[in-house]
Image (cartoon, rainbow, N blue to C red; front, side, top):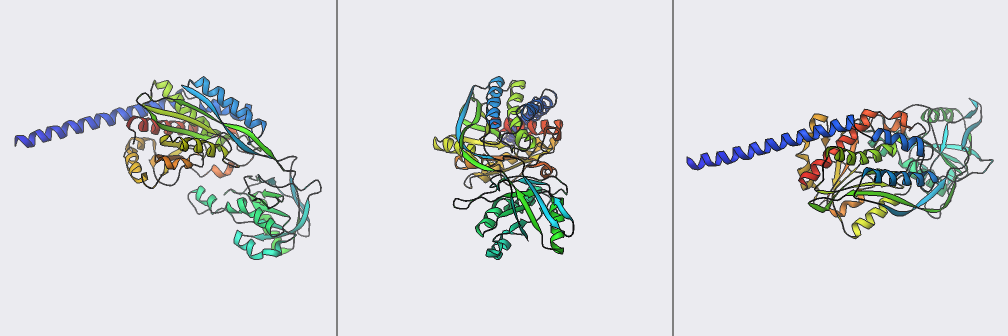
Length: 460
């Protein structure tokens, strides 16, 4: 009986200690959210980045200004060390304003389309290209038509699936048209390509984004048109043959030197264990890049601000990275991974924010298959501490800029905001500061800081 009483006492002490520890963590996370909502700086940082720096496509003066803004902001934040990591980035220029119009239709006459050149498009010259339109719903359909596409303008018109709850899943199911469609059209002799904008919204706003022409395939004029105009064009094509004129003034220039912006606070106990927070600094040239990905970079920096405000000296090294060139090349991510994996470093975790500044719902995660399930089980146990903030930890990927860190066998996270409105703004001219909600942005930063706090305190 004495033995059992002793065992019971030990278990009682362990349970009491565990509960006390959970209470301490819950209190600290509450403090993190309170600081983010009352003393946060990310919203004003986003205002400066979007309004003062503005568009920042890789290779442009805007991107260079953004790097300098990052360098100064990191020094001001008081990192133990700050550096610029070089990378060579592509330089594509849009040139003069593009245009597209239906030419002399019997149904609607001459009609100006809401159009935007895709990143990587070729130029048409001043007169433009005018040709009959062929509508397809998939890459396979274009390939089946083959030589029949010669001299035509190929119209890719498969909508994002509105029945998908995850708009990112809907995007993934449709975006191949934009990325590879123009190249396939060019291979079969098409003189231009038109792509339905990647958004679930029916409106007049065209969305840009990368299209890829492999070496040996000459870029043709490639544009996206608004969803409303895509529906209109499709309806007219059911009644008559249609010709379109496309004018683009795009060109590829030589690669330019650029940089990732990196800052870190050295860990007091385990300095070789690194926890990364980051987002990508570049944006498309037609918008302020407020959701994509200004929100992500200022949220990553805000994690450091929250730790500073609360006087938290991390046990492990916290590193903030603003990656360059995610939108049309990922040169920054490649440079960082090649350097870090080559040393090799030990990123026990990395968190990327690149899904917009909307209300956070939790984190998705991934990792090397040899360690992922063990690491996931470890962090999943913290979910009860995040539950009061409606945050969950799940599986399903991390982010384009950190995914190459898998060989280090840590766990990689993507901040997962509510996705329903993201593609209203993604790669479009309306991705501006005014369309970011301050409270939602701050909640996302606090969510990242809370997860970093737990990773730093307990490790893996």
